[in-house]
Length: 226
Image 1 (cartoon, helix red, strand yellow):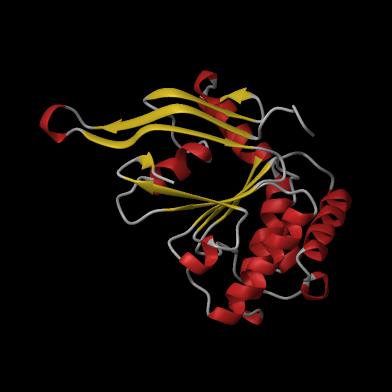
Image 2 (cartoon, helix red, strand yellow):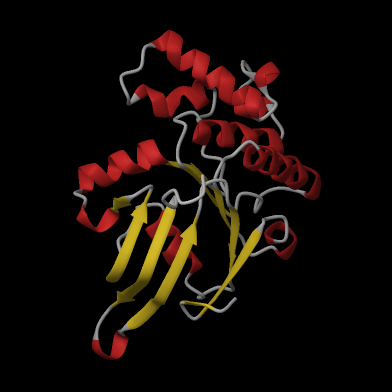
């Protein structure tokens, strides 16, 4: 909605490692706003700071200076246990490695984030099936990862990221292990999800993947250059 708070609000964030002669400024004054239903790709060469920014956006690390708010929550004020809760409730992660549990059905893999929330099994199964339907794999719910193609495995991983109904879908090189056909499958899912109102931030080094987003942000030496 116009005037509503942004999903991501990054304010003059720096991240510094080491000190003295070994000091590395991985992020150097990054300011970024991502509104609800945005689809943003973040690109940059190795050493540009995109992995560091990914870790901060995902609440896996905190800024040295500056502020980061996700869905209105100031991450800098949170304890480790509160950060873990934010990661579980507000962020859906999709990684380059699918991180599915082998010899476990697709629907059971998707249910996993809900198992830690005390949700009853029937409701977990209903929500997992709904998430699989969103990515076009409800008919593969009983299949184990080794019975699915790479693109299908990544779509199961996307369903798992969606099952908690997070404010943000955060994808780190989600097509890095996929061929061109499977890449197209996964990007089509992202586009459908975004069209339905999902907020997506995608980290990638592939130009053709970044070009599919509505906004493209380029990092160089820890700064946003475009």
